[in-house]
Image (cartoon, rainbow, N blue to C red; front, side, top):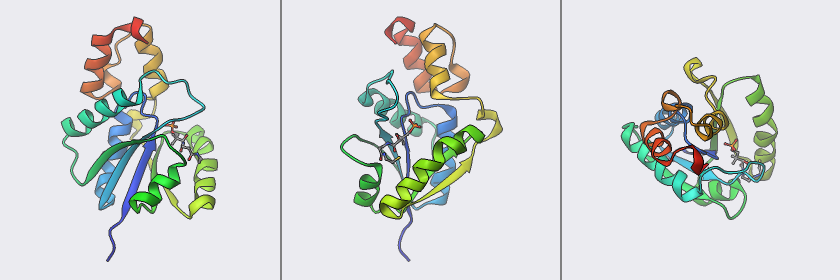
Length: 166
Ligand code: PNS
């Protein structure tokens, strides 16, 4: 039987507890999981991609996530090009609310039209339903404590950097 490879794409700016939960659960469902930082042209980034990559790798490692998990980044074309390159047949996204369904549905449909890839939605743990990278960015930039919402490596990085850096 061929192995099932999936991609968890996102901006991860910064990675949150919600992201880690989806990664942990997806890693149990697939033989190989690629967690991919992708540039979102519609969003102004807080952290450079190299920094997000370091934080995501450290967060996945520290969380002791089981399974075959590869962390990478992609900025040279369509997400489905990356999926094709690594032999992935599934994209995995976390859903916290009806708003996420509305946001994700067009992307899932277009990605399917582009390459036949399927998108699997994992329902977020209610504990993470209010956690978003954009909220974390806002609170961190105003000097608030984001420790409950982000993995420890991200909390350490944001605390060391201080609000004026964002
Ligand atoms: O975490 P985000 O910002 O909601 O993730 C969105 C992302 C980066 C996955 C999405 O913008 C994306 O897939 N960008 C890659 C460009 C692409 O392939 N676009 C066409 C299909 S939607």
